[in-house]
Length: 132
Image 1: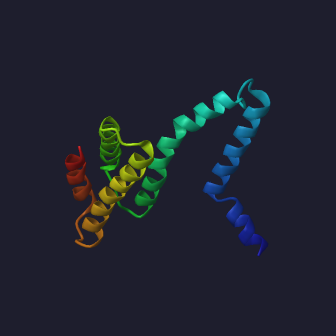
Image 2: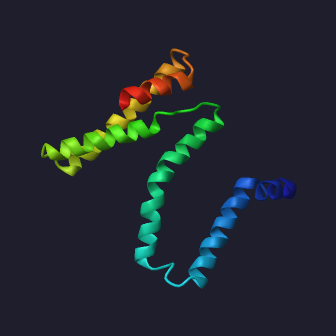
């Protein structure tokens, strides 16, 4: 039992997480202004969009698939958001619509790959061009 707990503790993902925590704690203690609200809001604001795209992409790569249309889907959702805003819709209405658009675009990719058995590379190259 102790051996399995030790094995889990020294896995690469656990070590990377622990190092991240150590670096953040070190930064709070020794870097002037690291923990102030403005700096933390910049850190979160700059990393959150990348994390929202990178984390699901990691799952795809682990599954042995690839999705090249992620940026085009995000761009399409952003363009639709701007167009709907210019039409006078409220942001409370626009955000769910754009999220639904992103889900539908991903669902199309997923169905083409899983139900029709098409290669994910070919499907996402095609939808990359279509969503642009």
